[in-house]
Image (cartoon, rainbow, N blue to C red):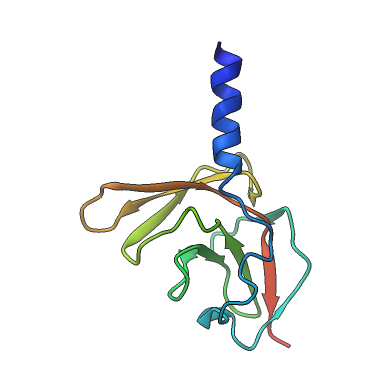
Length: 127
C-alpha cells in the first residue's frame, strides 16, 4: 500500500517537469533577451551569492544566477507562480537538480502556493 502511494506521488510530481523546449514559439523571456542558450544540465551548484527567483515575464520559469550566466528552469504549463510568491527549495545536497521539489509561499499572506518539480537547468550566456 505504501509503495502504491509513493509511486502515485512520484508520478504526480514528475508530470510537472516539461521537456526543455517548452518555451519554443513564445516570445522570449525578458531576463534572457540577448543571451544564448546552452546545453541543458541536470544540476547546478548552489552558491551563497546567487539567488533562485521567479521570472518577471513568465510565471512558469525560475531563474538562478546573475552576471554572465543565468540558469533557466521551466516548471511546466501546469505549474505557475505569482509575482508575490517566494520560491522555497529543499535540496538534498549542494546542488539544485532535476527532480527536486520547489514550492512557494505568498510574500504577504504567507499562504502556501504551488508545489512543482525542477526540470533541466538551461544556461543562458551573454555572447
